[in-house]
Length: 176
Ligand SMILES: CSCCC(=O)C(=O)O
Ligand SMILES: [Fe+2]
Ligand code: NI
Image 1 (cartoon, rainbow, N blue to C red):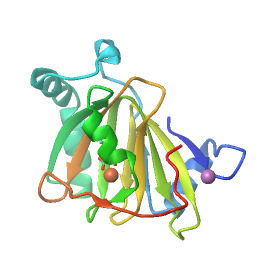
Image 2: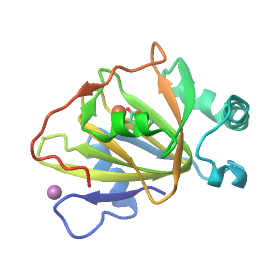
Image 3: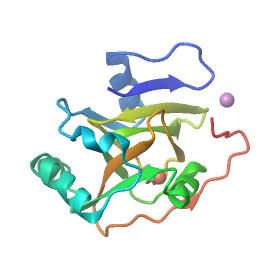
Image 4: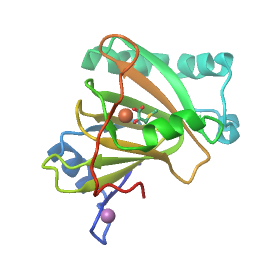
């Protein structure tokens, strides 16, 4: 289950308030119960193509149903860890995309710091296996690993399987 913290406030947002807050913020969220990712993936920092294919096979029906329901055409799977420093650096600074950022978490954990819809600050959504998150197009956000050593995630696309990353400048933004 995702965790949510609004920067500048002391108390985390919990329980059903998480979904309500995310909806207000235009961030689509759903929760898939039942983790089907084999434990062997818990200590992986990189995945072979065969391992990625295995995970996609395990989740294939659920991913395909979700994609059909929401109109996504293609997907891939990536792992982020300290063995993928380029991706950590690229997504670690504030950026946005012209397409929605659609993510299904299969393993590990990651923190999305997302700008509030009205521009007044940021909230941090910590996503773990079973969390499905859509950061809307053009919304500034940044990503970092959570307490787990990796983040294994399916990325879905409406069109081409890539999403250009634009740097968002905000002097008030800090990574943590
Ligand atoms: C790889 S999932 C989270 C990182 C991110 O912001 C992105 O992919 O654009
Ligand atoms: Fe992003
Ligand atoms: Ni702050």
